[in-house]
Structures are given as structure tokens and as C-alpha cells.
Figure (cartoon, helix red, strand yellow):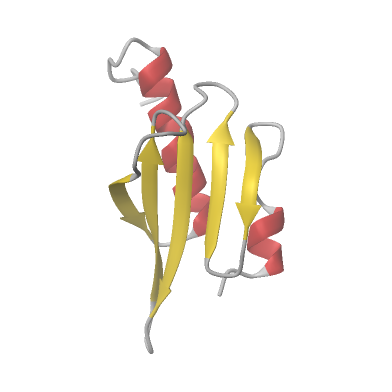
Length: 96
């Protein structure tokens, strides 16, 4: 299950919250207007989050990747938005 603490960590300044549940979260990026679904899968020894994406409300979701936490999923979504807003070119990291 997705905990209340994890649900509260979703940035409402960055996302429109479409639906919150104990096994899935549906959000829309305010930057790109893309739709995202984050589903939790739990096993006896670990859990992970599956990230799904679609560009418009009428499309079907397609799978993007798995992450270890909901915070990692949110960071992935934000990096994907940066990629989209940068003309689909990789963002240069000058901090290295």
C-alpha cells in the first residue's frame, strides 16, 4: 500500500492530482499536461512502483519504468518533463 506520508510527498504545485489511492496515484504535470500513473506492487521481500504515461486524456497509458520509491518515480517524471520541454534533447548536467 502507498502510505499517507508517501501520498503527502506529491508536489501539488507541480502536479494536478487526479486520483489518490492506496495502490495507485494518477497525476497530470502542470508543465507538459502529460498524464502519469504510479502503481505500487508489493512482494513478500520488496516493493516497487511502476510508472505509466500518456500524452492526452483519450490515449491509453504506456509503461515507462519501475522505481524503488514514490519519490524516485516523481523525480523521474520531472526529468521526463525537462526532456520534453528541452525539445526532446537530453538535459546537460554541468554540476559534474
